[in-house]
Image (tube, rainbow, N blue to C red; front, side, top):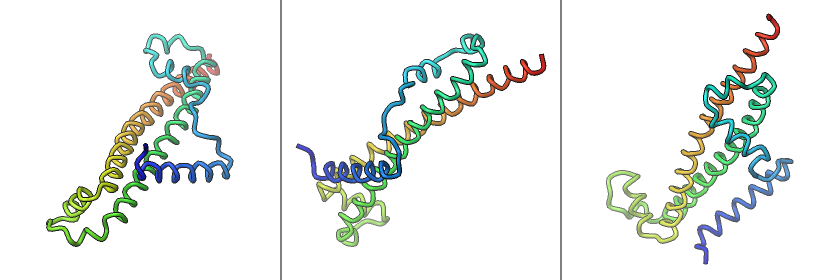
Length: 163
């Protein structure tokens, strides 16, 4: 059985999914070109040199799609972190001033440790933060590789234009 904190987060996610749908955004799914994107991310320098100009342009589009997917997943985890943090504060606000600790962070940690619901929310927040950090790294990596393919496509185009 799910903890009430998880159920509430699922409701918040469902609300945001509905809001995104109203904006006309498709559901968050891996793009159809997911496997191609993974292959492009793993190509070595020798394999990249063999790409045709069309292949390089296609790689840019495929990686742009994949980067958009990763960016959206990153934003989703960031929203979860913020929702958990806001809910934690609301959950333990009454206990904060009663804590015998020097700093705000220490009082918050003590108040969280005394409340099972807040403890579960903090675990969920920490997991969302770990996912967010990992996704952020991958988003930067994909963007960098996409730019390398863009530069390759531009190089081919200039070479073809100027002989």
